[in-house]
Length: 313
Image (cartoon, rainbow, N blue to C red; front, side):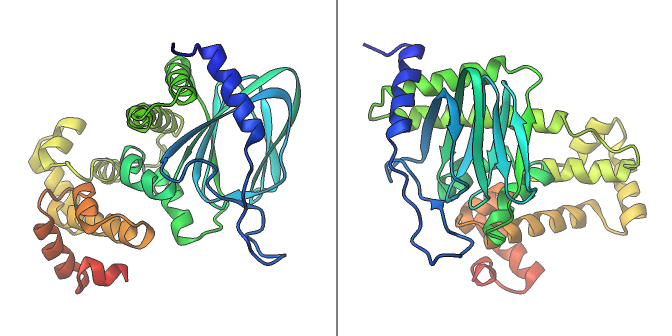
């Protein structure tokens, strides 16, 4: 018999209380002390954690995975390392943490708190989920930065304007994970994708366009957000201009053709992914708009003077 939502919360809450957190074995004083290791089964790519209680006080730590902590019920406090401050994550909000970023949930409440954590292993995150978040340049940098600078110590704090869909997705994930079956990880993947798409949508809607942004800036941003599929006709339709006008504008303002700007964006994105992830060249080529990896190899070598694999090394 399937567990109910309340039963799932209770079950995962008890499991959370019994987790034997493991830490990296490093010398005292190292910036990596108290770095939590992946607490789930090594074969799991996604883990759902539930804290349920009135008092949460964790030691300041880092972790070797991405995490998305949702305040499902009640508010809780978080201490962030880089910003050296305490923030409050209110009900319906999400705190997103990078691998190795300093973090400590800390707070008390007269009403019961329920915090749902969606933990994702690093390689799985980039292979399966990163593409739904990477269209926005700021999100792309945020998620990729800890792979380049291990101690970037940043976080994202999101308030959902309407958290109905987010809560329903979280509930489905909690119930599924509390009653794990052989295909639970496969069930969690599309749910996690849908959840992260909601995160990306909310992040974009909460980041208003600067008043100083020119039409050229907007075109460049649109190209970056649709790097794998964008065409001149797409841009013209989106901005309600003729394709010839867009082409002329890009050349006048940037001194480059549309194709040259597109190539530059794709190569820069590919270079970042090669340096910052363990994705294969074939996976990266698809992410930047090349359906044929051979065409990507050729374009990359012509642009950088070396093969993608040589660049990555």
